[in-house]
Length: 427
Ligand code: GKR
Ligand code: MG
Image (cartoon, rainbow, N blue to C red; front, top):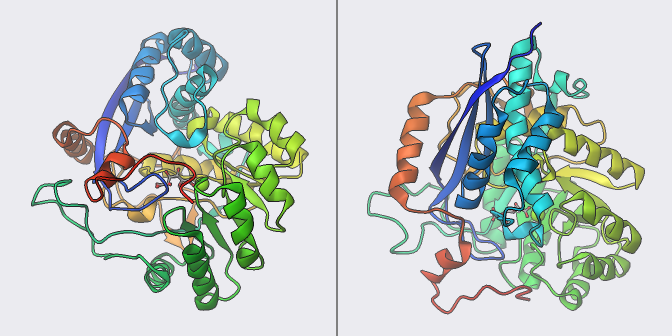
């Protein structure tokens, strides 16, 4: 087989409706941005990828795209080398404040991570194989995900949306009863076996009460709480006794490896992270300090699927568990996450996904089917998802019209509370 060579890359930013989900920074904006990547080849095959859709990410993708021309879709080392050269000493732009200090390495990893998915999709399409098989073979045919529970409002603050904005029908969830009701709905519809609550929103004791209520409503079901580093070390150590015995893990109670290590030393709860270990360079400090025992991988910022497999190997070496992080994403990323998780023998926990909150997508329905809280690996070839051109055009137009160009949960919150400040830890 002659390897397909890249003839061009199309990057299309889209905006999708998003509900007012509360978190440590503030509240989700009415639209979240994503970028759809189409890798065109001389074999007529198109590889699909998906990335954040904020301005810095788009600039990095657009800088890398032209230098990929002529490259084989199997040349992943070439992808990394050419992307690094194209980005040069580029200012490190990051779409999220969740992954610690920005660095050139992280920017390269995010850019490669996005493009590499399209390379793998094209490899699968060229060989007739599923991406999970290209990655070394599926060790599971169905990938378990956890229900992603959020405190939330029923609608976005006045002024955030126009009069025609379609609110969803979840209503608000601002206390333990609201969170339990939300969990029941998600478990009924999707069959999730484990539940994760996004915390860092209300006083930690209130969030511990919500966890206790979930424990009572769903006896024996694994639970997680993620305050996104919004608790000080002292607050964390005050609250952890209430959570011990209730959680399978506590995710990022506080910020940074030294702080996490102090919390880890004072609790029996396993600590997980997608904040203080987000790149290979941060692993030695975490090992030395004993700050975490579970890492949430994310191909979007660890540098792709190959890099995620490398991370999985290191987790096994250091005796860490492995879970998977999610940010708002669409079906291309969900398919990529599912293929990757299927090919990771080291995966020890159900993965996160924001999917339940997304009502719009760029892929045709039918490829990703939920059953008992799991997704069957799409049949392929490649990722096994197909672009819905009409939806892509509509969501691109929505991007042009909505005016949002970067994620800003702080400003979104200020529409409801003008005194709101960016502050961490808040508790
Ligand atoms: O969507 O509000 C959110 C989450 O807080 C997200 O931004 C985080 O990346 O899900 C995430 C996490 O686990 O930290
Ligand atoms: Mg997290």
